[in-house]
Length: 349
Image 1: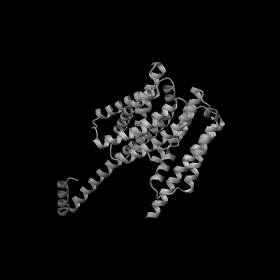
Image 2: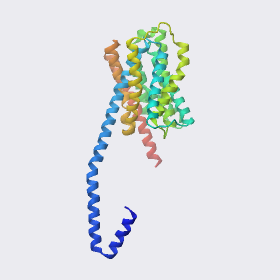
Image 3: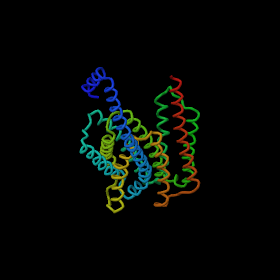
Image 4: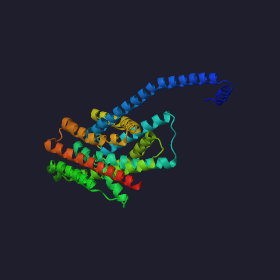
């Protein structure tokens, strides 16, 4: 309340208690009436934000699940590293330009350096290596291996923090997840006679590890910074760091800009990168992380089904069972780590 009004009200209370009481009642009525009318609008706004957040999460589950298929279509008809160079340079430029147009400023040199490291680990050595491997490895198998990223995160945490020891539940979940991957490989035994397939599988495991390290780096270093600007810079640097890899490993002879390549690149730039990142960060800002992390369980299922429908990739009851066991193992590891942290917090009180 305005201090001048408050002083006058005190004066009225001293000189005329009856008038003061009537004034207080009128003031209270107006305040309660204002609150009573504003509460429904506030609740409606909150409900709308939560609804949009769930829609954004649903979009992430679907969009990132489709990128494995689109990526394989692109890299099997186009130099794989060059494909990722174009994707990340364009996507990073678009997202960064949008942020600058919205009034955001270019961050400090330290923040830019942190995004460069994140882009190297996640875009250059992570997603792009998966794309290179998908030349020989099916999109469904690549997606299931990449779904193990939460397990890598737990293993890294336990390795860095030597004092922490894995619980029996975490060990059981880890073994279950690896067992599910082994069952998937069992369904593709004939492909292991191809050395390029084995190289691709190893590359996806290492790329997944790099993505996990990059995720932990970004989470630790990006506190208090704009996530959208960070994502744009990460993709820009990831694309720049890929140029030497493309010059060394890609073959530029016979490049053809077919309609499939143009559509694949456009989809990966606008949908798989810009739109998916925006939806992901919106969901993180309005939903608990435990709910947002559900996308990691849905992406591989969508990728496997789409690979079967569009590219005629192998899918049978054994593969479905293996996917289920792998995802169950990931869930058990996450749950075990959450329980471990909960017990540790309670004991420290």
